Image (cartoon, rainbow, N blue to C red):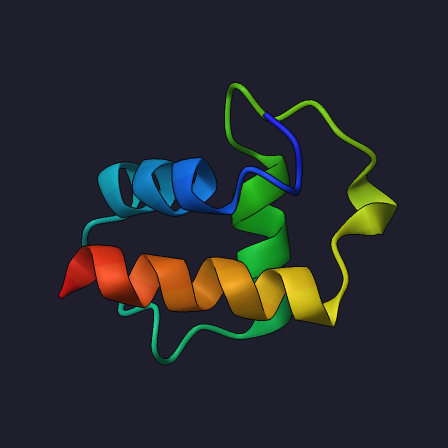
Amino acid sequence: MKWTDVQRIAEELFDKHPDIDPRTIRFVDLHNYVVDLDDFDDDHARGGEKVLEAIQQAWIDEAS
């Protein structure tokens, strides 16, 4: 899974962290959750603010 797999990342975060409200997560924590996913295999440094915003929004949509 790569940073561009925004929807898949959001789905996995939703499944792995059901008790976390994605609306209140800090980007540092979100970045760590993404790179800790079992199937994640991309350069950790590429997870910039724009991609994290997209993942956060997709996670919010998944949780709604």
